[in-house]
Image (tube, rainbow, N blue to C red; front, side, top):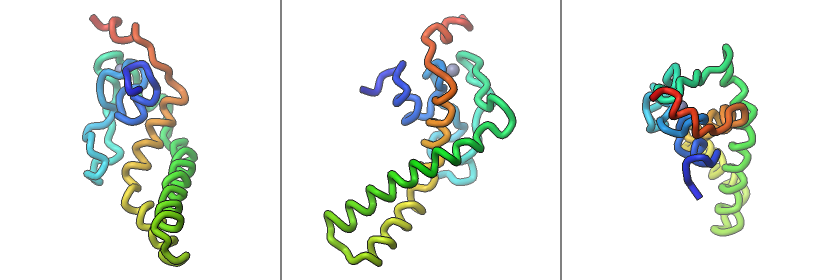
Length: 129
Ligand SMILES: [Zn+2]
């Protein structure tokens, strides 16, 4: 399922959306909070400029809303329907889930956002060599 050429590969690994050869971020670990937004200027393999236009990644906020809802629903199902906690504890579980997974949600949202605009191109790798 997770092979190069699949958008899901780029979204989950944070790799370049065009060539899938290398990571977009300076630090792969999203939990190093000081570097969470630090990205390479360009992909060194296919030379894709990640920030297509100024403030490009502001659009990822729309995506992060949806991703946050997905995490909230998962937390709700686990806390309320599987474990069977009270309603107030379920809300606390949802809030804690959103806080704990916030860096991950932001990264995934950026990856989804850039993958909406750029498609995989296997020939992009060969361009440089
Ligand atoms: Zn690339």
